[in-house]
Image (tube, rainbow, N blue to C red; front, top):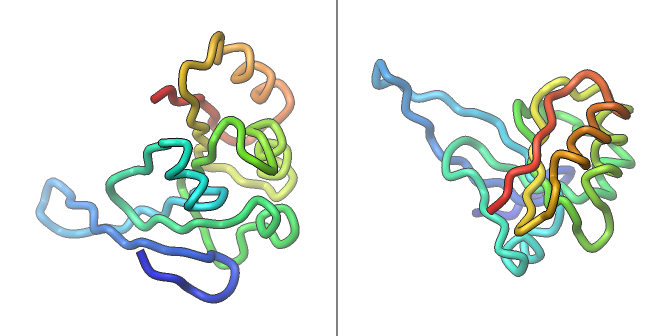
Length: 129
């Protein structure tokens, strides 16, 4: 991964192969601190273009020039949780897929239902690792 100045903090570009053999890029945004991701053992997608963005930058400026198809975050991070994230994503009009990672979370469907009831316009699910 390489550091970038500006809104997206850190970016990693990984090519995704299509059936026909051509390449395409899928834009993915991971919210939070990359070091915290590693410390918590949260997995990241192994393909596509991944940009890290802090929750504070997302809340203050939105997604800027990024147009992600998928946004990932931990269910619970040091400065935010997935409900905070969902509210911000709803406010800025995100219409892609939001996935939150957790380990051994009892009854994730309760949180999923709450987020879906509060925020319309994007797909949400909790992925347990």
